[in-house]
Length: 132
Image (cartoon, rainbow, N blue to C red; front, side, top):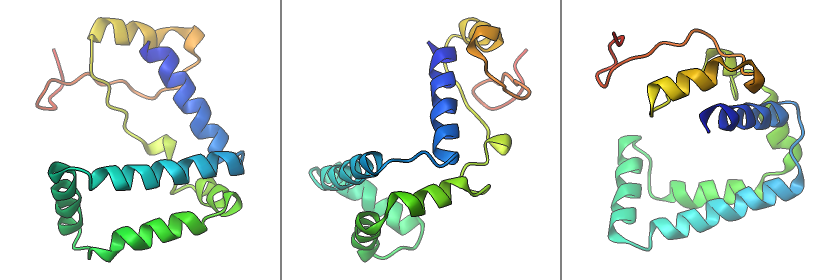
């Protein structure tokens, strides 16, 4: 289902970038972020993973609280403006990595019915070298 899934993904990204983000979608995203943040601290693995992420970027612990506060103060209009910016969703410069059954995926990507407007497709091996 790679082809249809990519078609839906690109449709949703284009919809967001066009400015069609509703308050309900924003509220859902805020709730998901809050739930995911709480879930991260429900286990030792989640807590250490979050700590490692903060340490990697040199961010203090209060970054989590500040991010949550910023999320809760966001409004759909501001997020729409951010999504419209070329830097937010630069799909024309994106790299898409697909993993799975090569022949099936390539067949779906080539299917004109999927209406995918992909750039050059490069198949690589596990090390990132062009596959033969």
